[in-house]
Amino acid sequence: MIITGLIVEYNPFHNGHLYHLTKSREITQADLTIAVMSGNFVQRGEPAIINKWDRAEMALKSGVDVLIELPTIYATSSAENFSYGAILALEAIKATNFVFGSESNEISKLRDIAKLSINEPDKLSTEIKKNLNDGLSFMQAKQLAYEKFYPNLSDILTEPNNILGLNYIKALSVLNSQIKPYAIKRKGANYHSLDLSSLSSASAIRMRINSLDEVKSAMPERSYTILKKNKNNRSTLQVGEIFAIISILLKRAKIEELYSLPEMEIGMPELLKKEIYLSSTFDEFINNCTSKRYSNSRIRRALIRLLLGITQTDLEESQKATSLPYLRILGLNSNKGKLIKQWKDNLEVDLIQKTSNYKPESKLSNLLWTTDLKATDLYFNLIKNDEYSLGKQDFIHPLVII
Image 1 (cartoon, rainbow, N blue to C red):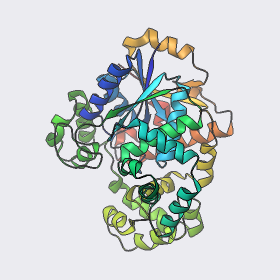
Image 2: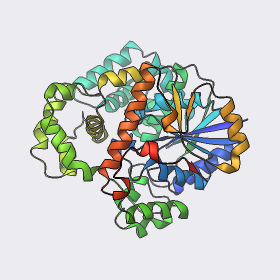
Image 3: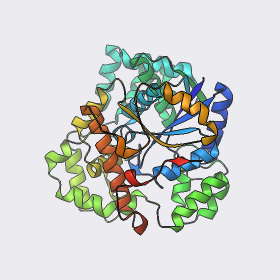
Image 4: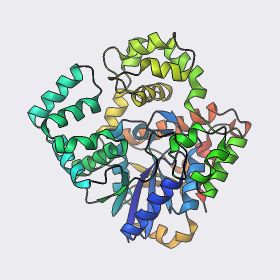
């Protein structure tokens, strides 16, 4: 059986995702397509625009066969640890291959950079450190170092999907994985574009959550209907809406507590503490803190980790993992019942379909699981909707089956 894995966020599912899914099935001749998806908080350091089950339903109704939740600690990490966790998940689902989007579609270059990253030459390491000391972010420092020593590869490091692809391939190598990667050239608007078209980015769609009719043509009809239902029910969530809570947490946090968060370095906690008193909106705060050293997404991830209580120690524990202790199913396609049963029977990892039945037995499983449960509770507590007032949605919400 050919199992094609997809690493996704679907925040929300749009026409570009449908293109990626369709091409992935075509290229790999998949019997099953299984998507590993971020849960209620995503890699750019935000709450997802709608909850993980409704995003799973969007994907299932568009042709994905099974939705697996990527543990929150990985889902809210930098590109490197996000990718590592996602590849661990693909290993656990026994994927034959996986397909990722890429701005360049030059997988050979990504392999070359991955090899250099794993066995970094001294001259490259020294140059990256020099650039970091000059105040550049890690990716900027790396790109400039590659421009100096490997100019034929440096252009790859400027685009977000290429960077993720590089880290997927690096993780495959580190884990000695036999999963075969494929790249598909990204179509339509780039990752950060806010322009409108039939292939608008997820960013453009989220920005227009209060005027959804403008982006109707950029989404499959079923996805649009689910997103509109959430908007009408007041069940959407954007990071700016939780600024008051983040502000309180930052103001009450001690400097040493902020230094315990992942990706913190000297000066960053002091900057956050200073600017939170000088900013009246979330966007103003982010803009005031963003610099060539501290990227927008890095600051957002720091705030989400503060909200979720994810520490550097937690991150390091996740980085030591060589396999995932469990797979959490969010939804599945009943039309593929026989194949899905065959797939389940071959798994060598705990498969969670009913939350109350799962009891973590290791330090890693307890860390990942309790963080996932806390993330879901916090997400729904942040939504001002009586339907979710009881909390513990992970124990209440049914598996999505279409």
